[in-house]
Length: 422
Image (cartoon, rainbow, N blue to C red; front, top):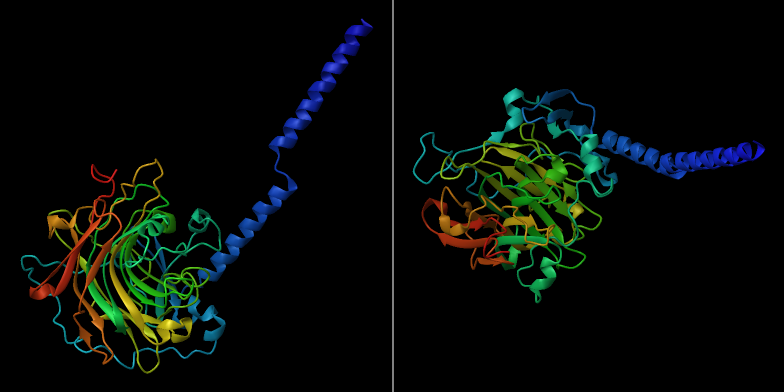
């Protein structure tokens, strides 16, 4: 009997030890609890920094919340060099010919396309003296690899047409189909960009169509100003097509960000929200929609301005943000970019543009038309010697053309993975 009790006691003690070990393994350690608490605190602090007190908030049909923020309270003024900055409400100079352009006719002509707006406009507008800012949510921050990385492009994503070793470009996982000019001094660029909603294979991939204004080398000191449309589930949490901007003065290392997700770009317009959905978008062999974007340098103040359409001057990047671009750009690029993560060992099926190749033409393939540069006399003109570049033309391609009311133009894009792009 005593032996049975002794063995039973040993068994009980063994079970208690197992239970304690299980509890210790299941329960979070003090270190992990502290790490989690630190992350939550970082998220809260970043949300407070990005989401300024709103005068008015508008719930968009796509789920976004657009906050109307006082002009002087926007994120740009968190920058120490902008504490006493006097906001420029107009540029001193504007490229000739822009405001004189005819508005889009109410009757559609064959081969023409329609104007677009933003989805949140369906539910309201921001009052004068404010700017619309898409509210950042906790989930937006938690999707990022880190709080510090939120709203930033990864290093070395710029298309380098004249790289001596094209294999080095594709190592970054980014692929492009672009038209470009270089070898001169450029003070801005313009294009009308066909708007689509390309399909994205993986949440960490994106597809965009944009203008790049570039200065410096493709090393660690590259200056870039960018504007266009993008689909980025990782950044926005959905597959909507959105207006975006980006800037960097050190090749995407420490400086710059998308939209207004850091201090830099100063917005003056109360009607267009950076990062908000563009509405409507084009359909295959159906209605076509496009947006017109112009970036130009004010020769007096040195600031780089952004205009959306013929009517909306959105704001400017202050000159002090840049080194090379404080003088001029040395290269302009127009076109598409996707992330190819090759997650299943094959090329991504993420689409660029419409997801169809240039040879299909209008209504099927995406386009850039009326591409222009701003010269040293502050005039818009058709660029000379336009070249093209793509890493794998069987996946995404580009074809240029010229003539008629489209001026210099090109079709671009493709489906990604296909029989010729395994």
